[in-house]
Length: 149
Image 1 (cartoon, rainbow, N blue to C red):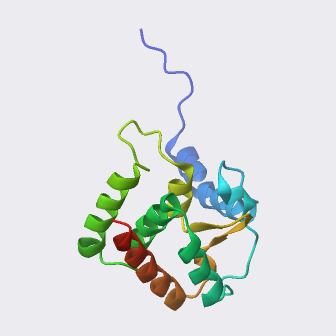
Image 2 (cartoon, rainbow, N blue to C red):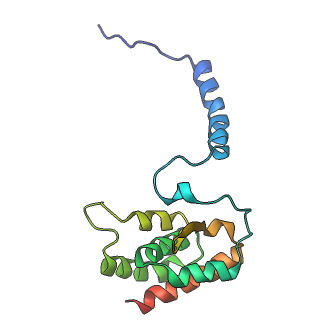
Image 3 (cartoon, rainbow, N blue to C red):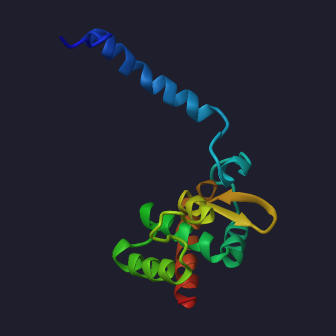
């Protein structure tokens, strides 16, 4: 004989699912708790980062940050995947920031979420810049990556 323990009725299951968006919203309001640079990002009003700040960060970014940001740019459609993906693949191969053993670089992972480290300062998020600045920054990232190949 098989024992199933507790089984939720259909209405109880629907209640649990209905509460899920509330829990997700609460997580958005809470400060970040994950590992990596994301915990260090200052809360900045969206769209408030200046072009100079973003472009300066791109110009001084380390290769792992560049690769991650380029991945972010492709995923966010600021760069055309068919054109930018081969550049990113070659760049990742050269820098070995995404090795086959899956022990990648945390800077690459943070960059993939749109975070850029700026020297010894707190990282910035491209999400805090206007869409126009993000698009231009992504073009600069791609150009810089190409020049390093």
